[in-house]
Length: 579
Ligand SMILES: [Zn+2]
Image (cartoon, rainbow, N blue to C red; front, top):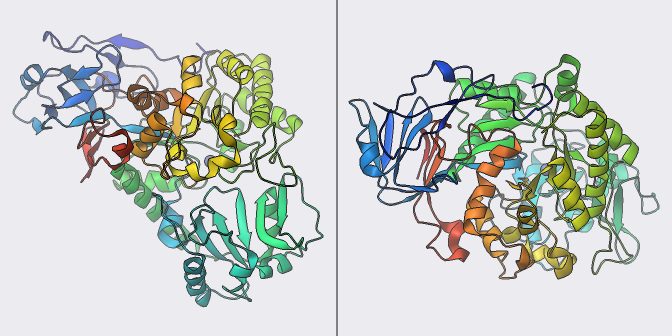
């Protein structure tokens, strides 16, 4: 079935062991699970039995259960406590869940990882939750770093969020001049599409207030027409020559990357994530190393770019290559416009309260985009573009429509990362191609302080889970970490309430039910990478990835879902996190 990328696996029926009431699931065979067919699939003498739980399976055939059994890293039976306990053998571990809620492991379909940054760089904001900081605290942290940094080398701060400042004014170049007059200083907005620089950086890059904006970016000015320090999208690249980067020996670099992978993996499972789609070049080797040394605790869909993508194209390696732990996914997000949180996305109407009138940055021409999509799709690699604004999504769909028409390949599920501002026409075109959108997951809660730049009318079409689901499209949850925190429970809270940390509700028409939000964060994530046959629900035959939650999300106050404790995270039947 060469022409159907996502459905070329074959299924074998597996009928349990004849115990009435067991969910007889499907056992996956075929290329993706080389070991599955050899495995002992009888549910007797399982490795683990979990009972006395409120199991929300996210399997529509049997949505609720009390217990399940795990063997060889997979669910082998799901049903009532008395039935499943009957399977317990001599070597079976048992776990009394004491009526806690159990759901499939959460899946984040867009994440930049950045464990190395978290471990070794200056963090000027809180990566994981809403927290306000002062400009002075940023200056102090960067000054301390500058004191140990050779002049001429960049001093950088990460996880800055311009709307989480106690000062009630923007960070500017003069603030960063207080850090150093010998070092170029660069504060990265956590959104990744804007940076804040000191005067040394501009001088060394020979950029003045008179330098014209380059294609796809801006040097922002204050009321007097002076550079204010903020630089957007493609203009940031023009400042890179202003300083040298901290350098490391190959061995040191390898160690940092590897430590970073282990660090972020621990963090992911702490929040209940069991699969993450990584947009993080250069860490594949470290992931494999950590996997061998048991430091990789979550499953990876690795989204290639640069040399790796090129090597795949040149050597006939398609999306789906790999195994149940590390698999090559769609491409890295191919960027077509700016950012939602930093208000640089390409939209068809001007932003509110920004003058002169501004409609965001498009960062790629239609011709270049068409050529890229054609080449990648032709190589059997799943397309994935970053497009936030309606103008950018239109361009991406134009390129996808063209590529899929030139080389029809059945159900390839081209991906759009963010896919934030939609309209009826875009939805119709997405449905026609079976586009899988990876929508911002935690923004409704975390970034509600930024939605006034768009206004209620636009927000009613933004991160539009309700519209997408009603149209029969399968949206998944993409935190985009570092831009958004990656907590799936924060994401679910935002999806069901559309209310932010500050109490503001935007686009309430896009609310979805808790059941739908659970699907978005589990099975829809599996569908996004064409892996719904092996993960995303608690179903016999699927990988035993699940999360134990202290409280039932159905009964807690909707505005406190994000605070529910993750008690235990299990991947492939092994506990990888315990509170
Ligand atoms: Zn991203």
